[in-house]
Image 1: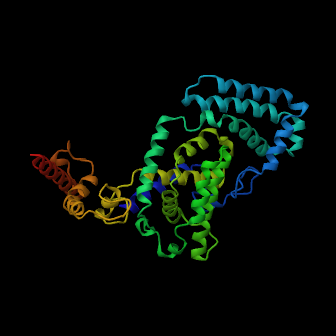
Image 2: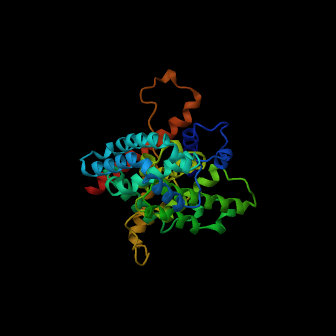
Image 3: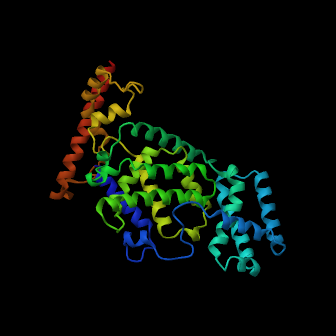
Length: 368
């Protein structure tokens, strides 16, 4: 069921957040005051970046500036396998960071704020390498295409009730502000800026959930994730998976803190759920799901072919059981090894197996 799948995703998300002190999602979302914490409301202050560029071009920084420019030029010219992009870039960024952070004049210009310096360096390099590295993984491009196709079908009919989002939150649907903020991710090129789009969208969702409950406490993952899934479907970003991979590959891992880490994990969970959605994943009539997701509906008129609908209704009970068929876990089990608590599972698997056999026999007879 939808809730069981959602529960698994939440558990996976929590397990990925291994650096939480007490396991409290609320504390993790709120985070702590820290100089490296991201401003969730937008990309980096351009004044900070221009200040970084100005400092980089000072005579005291000429050596590292020359080295960075040389690396960028060499990287753009070399033939490097896409799977090696991230490691090569991160290795060189680490070297440049060490050099810059040891430059006292540079550090004085930024009041020893290492995070701003690391952000500036990362932006300077990645803006110039973006066209070379972004969207170059074949597997990610395929996933983007499949996700976009699926969301395009889902967004035509999906409603909050299909994710069992509480009625108290329905007045805020379709969370247009969150959609707008998330859709901007394709417009930015720096890893931090793309990450800020995710954070801003997620914080917009958080605010609506708090307003609905007249509470200042951040919602739990079981309230937040269904809405995020809904927003991701409705937004249907064309390169979302490539953007997530880009952030994880080229964002300085030392700067994945607090809400940035939490929200990135949540949106990965949302994408994973959407990729695996089938008729049993949502709170929806299976027949309606197949009509909307299949080819039986005219995209222009949204009128259903009665013959096709009758055919779907006739086949649905077979297909529904096949989709949810569990693994056969007792194939090698001896009779004496069975216990009473095994019987419900055994019966469920037998019924699913019978449905599959009957379905296959019927399908073969129809061909004849």
